[in-house]
Image (cartoon, rainbow, N blue to C red; front, top):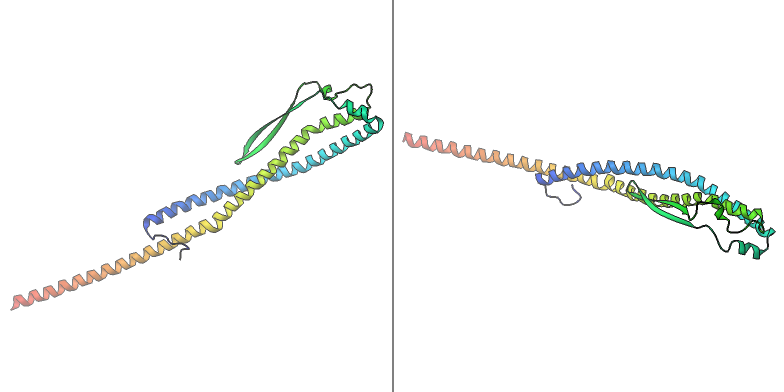
Length: 225
C-alpha cells in the first residue's frame, strides 16, 4: 500500500515513472558530486596539514629572532625602527567555482617591487636578528595566505558535502522507494480495475446472450402456434 494517497490513474502512473527516472538520474549525479567533493576535500586536508606545520615553524623562527633582537637592542630603538613601515601589502580576493562551491583565492601585491623595502629602518643601529625576523615573516606570508585559503575552502566543502550527502540519502532511502511503492500500488489498482471490468463485460455478455436466447425461444413458440 502506498504511504500517501495517490490517484490510481494511468496519467498519474506515467507522471510517477517520469519522476522516478529523473530522481534516479539525479541520485547518480549527486553521488558522483559527493565522491568528487570528498576527493578534493581530502587533497586539501593533506595540503592544509603540510602548510600548517610549515607556517607554524616559520612563525616560531620569527618569534625567536624577535626575542634575540629585543635582547640585543633597547626597546626604544626597536620601537622606532618598526614604527614607520616603508612597504605596503594589498590583498586581492576572488572566487573559483568547484562543484558549485565558491572557493576563495587570495593574492597579495606589494606597493613597490624592491624586496629591501620590507626593512623600514637603517642597518647601522639595528641587529641582524631583527633583519632575520622581518625577512622570515616576509617569507612566510605567501604560505599564511595559502593556508587561510585552504582552511576556508575546507569549511565550505565540508558544508557542501554534508548537504549533498543528505540529498543523496533522502533520494535513496525516502523519495525513490516511495515512488516505486506508489507505482506498484497504481499498477495493482489498475490491474484490479481491468479484471473487474472484464468480469462485468463477461456478465453483461452472458446476460445479453441469455436474453437473446429467451427471445428466440418465444419467437419460435409464437410461430409454431
